[in-house]
Length: 630
Ligand code: WTA
Image (cartoon, rainbow, N blue to C red):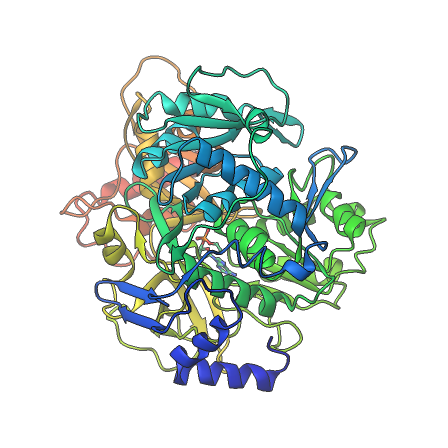
């Protein structure tokens, strides 16, 4: 573990000068079924990246068998939605048995190495257990956030031809009970590939079980053994697929493979959180996102850490819930998103009264740029000016944290993710692809050299992976983010430079929302942009052309409902403006930068609009906008 700034400098230097040696040494920390001799083969043009190609391993063996002398340590503390419901605590040994039982149930259902399994679950222990069970038997999990609609779920099921869906009878979320199983049933009306639905009892809600297809987990669990041998996996075999939105088309399945992901999640977890044995660590993400995968499940458990899983939401029963949980378990490392910080800040400081928060040593932020005000509030009120804030920049595609301060080693600076971790070689490029050598100039953030957990492909469509990440700037991985570097070499992430909106830390593609809006029968065409939003970071603004109608229609709610149905509540537009037309270039492309400006309350400096086919529409849109906002 890196312990000082000299350590960091030495690590960084050797990781760049001799990356193969650096990562090979780190690979010695793990159990291999076959020790790898080849470390790295790569080519960013294809792209084709292979780490430890000739090695064999199982990631769960590195969680359970490797940490065998710690088997009585606590692995997961599960905190339920209702504060007075009893929590669940699993030692490594208990978790191992749960994972093995789950593995055996999956095997009995005919799930084999390489089969895809969709996990559509609330934040219950089985979410982590089922992921690990897939990994144990070599099945490829694809977790779908349980807030996505039936349509989004079936798109993902079909894209990866999943054989099994794992779900529950319901989801307790704040004061609501969500019918998760019903969403699965709906999704399966348009999916032919799924043979079984494995259902976990959580809420006790009445759900319909289709004969021959739907199976209760608790019935099966009693019929199987609680030991399951680990499947031998090649380093580059698929570990999981996680769907994420891009600037065009449907969400794509980002593919991560076994060995590189294992190395890099443990490495980043231990260094970024400076986790020591006995500490209690809590990441508030949902396992439906990459943060939950890497920093609730794999990273902490590989390290043998004690990790908390929370079923509920930060504002239930009230806005003190997070802080009560921190005190209840004496949390030492706390990792959350700026949107949660801003939301809790807006409720006022009275919700902090009665919570000491004195156990905290490191507090973290992830998912979107953290504004200075939220950073200061977090620092003053949660960290009590005594805990470094790790502002961690990374992506679904990067698998693990890429740029972040190391607590008490690298200085924290509000709104800066600061320095790259060992093995990460960032570069800023201008729009023509020239390297920006000066500081304090905004550029496109790219990475020069592979790190162990870089995405390998987008499932079923390698061309898309190449076009999205490796074609804009030849020879580099392009992140889609803009960034600048200060005179200390610290990076500040400025946000997406493509058509992706970051709403409450969730990536939402504008094209995806437009497609959904256009499904509304009243709509002719739409364009969606992001705009600054006090709590969510960015909100979604839809400019919509509607059909002539003599009826009075509540377009706002009708369109939001259409989006809810097609994607899910997280993609519902915050604002909708009915417009007579959209500003388009002669080649038919919507000039989004004009709409982005208008949605941000700016009505001039649109830049070069000489290629606009219909410049007059801009004035009309501005007039409608001003009317809407008056
Ligand atoms: C944004 C989440 C600024 C960024 C781990 C990135 C951030 C996208 C930060 C990835 C940060 C993530 N500061 N922006 N610390 N962390 N982002 O795939 O735009 O859900 O490209 O992964 O979130 O989102 P994703």
